[in-house]
Length: 450
Image (cartoon, rainbow, N blue to C red):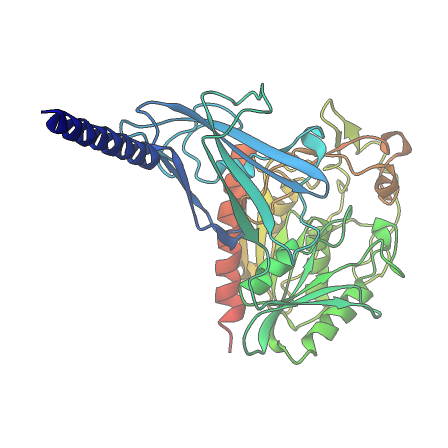
């Protein structure tokens, strides 16, 4: 009898232990897990975020952050799990936070600097390195952070690249200033000169991304560097033409397939370049003014001077400069005269270049060249239309040193912040749609040429 009791006790002990192990196993399987796909990708690719193992209708806060240029950027949004305990950013709405609604890439385009306010622009300076984002899932509603030691339910990291593996980066040290990005594979490749605006003439992000799409791209510096002009109106179109011709002569570039892309003053200069060279097959102008004022000489290496004191004004948000080109006798830059195809991207809430000048271009381009022009307008988008999913910034703080280089800026405004315009959601939509449009335009009018 005693042996039977002992045997029964042992069996019961094994059963309890097995039940406990089984419970532990189920608990481990059911704990929340965070899945991100792809975890390494290009910056213009969307990602899928899915969380499982939550309770039905459980609230969870997603937090995205990264540190770039010693500045932390962060976004937060609140989701409610479905009946199966799943949150899916592709089909479920954010209830509150940095954005609301179904926005697959909302966590990315709604990023804001932490501690720096809304004036710090996210710019990747070293494009050879990925942007490394941390994604955390916090329990409950944490869209207003209260505790820094709250343990996440799950977390992971995502790497987003500007340079596809195999793209070469060549820094130029001679007379021409800038950086060339050469695609992977056998050339020669279609070539592009890429220019940014008057506050910062060289940013490498778009050029690296274009090279990742198959274009040998020169990110050209034309202001502020060694041996370069320091004043905006001193930008030398002859230097830009020589840089374009240099690119056309490189062995990895097809000289029959050349173009230029520019934002703001870079777009303006791209149009001017097309008037000088029949080799320019395409111009992508992103919010660059398409006219020259009556005092300017199209082929001059330096602009004129005038008093813009009445055309620059300030608001509570910052300085607005989109009236500075107002004049009684505007002259269109005839970028079409050698047959170049023109794509114009317009932010309708641009506070630096007035959208009316793009309307003027549409209305006054000669009829025989009208088919060469495509204009895309984006309501609610501002001046700084960049590749997709980069965060919107409505007002920038360029600092007095850089503001001093703006010939037209009255002295009283040179310590002010400057408006770029736009609103987060429509601006994000504009960036996503316009980037696809730009790539399709380049494919049809440049890459496919033989």
